[in-house]
Image 1 (cartoon, rainbow, N blue to C red):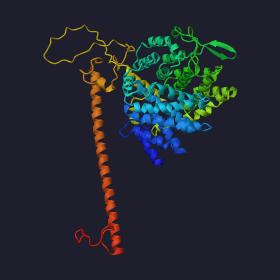
Image 2 (image 1 turned 90 degrees about the horizontal axis):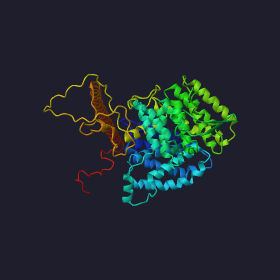
Image 3 (image 1 turned 120 degrees about the vertical axis):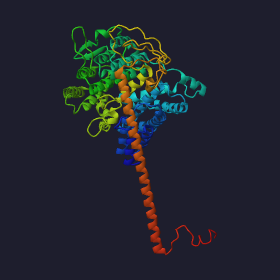
Image 4 (image 1 turned 135 degrees about the horizontal axis):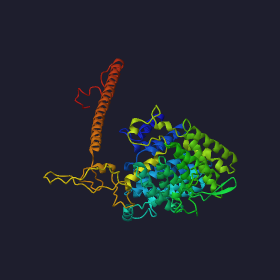
Length: 584
């Protein structure tokens, strides 16, 4: 293993083009980077950093499943047999567990979409390693961010493998064919993201229904709710209402500050259906702080960033919702985990906003508050949070960008968010789930004010069969896959007779855009073929050049042999062999 191998693996991973391109081979690149991670020193750190970045921003395709199972088994074996046996916590150990979290998150997405049927052998192997991982759990109790990765691997692994992984093939196949029951919290968070992305004005109704489900977040089955908080956080980067919704969902009935106990209430729209009994699982608390930190760093709206860090203001009729800074003031038996997560989130904010001139004031407030809290903190575990998180945020973000600090041309063509770099796995998560459960956005036509004309007389020409027009800005209900079948996005743009459900009329501008995209795609295909032909010619010329050099080298060797040995036969040829016709 050498630096050259690491460079080739990073090129195959497509770190500068968001994992997309003709030269990208993600399964092979992930396997090579994992093997390079077995080395020691700088090669190990660079390989794990590249693998983490690739798993964070790469697209989700079913061809990645075998490689993901291999990565999952390797990470579990690595943790159980090596890293957990060490007396101290190492940087590579933190990165390996973060790697396992990203791998199991992608496997869980494929499980939701029903693409893991037929992988019973891989599930059985994975279940064996998960049993061993549960015994290593006490080693990471002082580190909630690392323990979250362990718990997520255990819980999602249980769901993926099932309660009885060694059942017979027929029972396994029947279990795989069952539809995954989506949590209502995840469904409504996905609808919120859908409303924000498509400018649907029913976002307030979705928010009201989501607040009614806030007690679902107090249950032990927290994996689906965690995905919902990630999707809602992605929507909150561009919607202040979604941010208020997210902060109102957070159940912290009492906050201690300066000896005064204050109730944590919020927007009147979200007061109905609130329950001040109970609290979230600590895993959701950590994910909540991570989401707020991500919003502070990568939101495109300054007001949203300020609200996520400081909380909302108090105009007439409104109440406070705690921001990221207020989470440092919580006290109690288990509140150290929330303060630990808040400290790590503020460290990420200070590091992520460094160099941003427009956000310098926001960063100064976060840094001053963090330093004041660390000076007053009495729990040593919370004081160590800033050092532990350094292992995760030291990943060089510049590898996602080109030399000029901008996304490369291939990444910009993929319609990725403008907030680069960041936790792009949440954006991939929202896009994958929306393609799985929600219909494509219908084309909204401008209504005509003219009187309706009488229909023309029937003709002999064939007509396109039109569907019933979709109501404007309506949201789909939480129906099963039989009503919203899982389809590839390209199928929604197929022939009119193949998809009658989402068929809509296209005006002149839409048809022009479609034709233009076809011309661009055809031109791109032609350029790609020309480039491939040039590469083949160059490769052929290179092979001919190498062959010619070998022949000249052989002739030179024979010439020197004739000068020294005074024989013109080849080294392996017996003298007189040709004269006797090959007979000895």
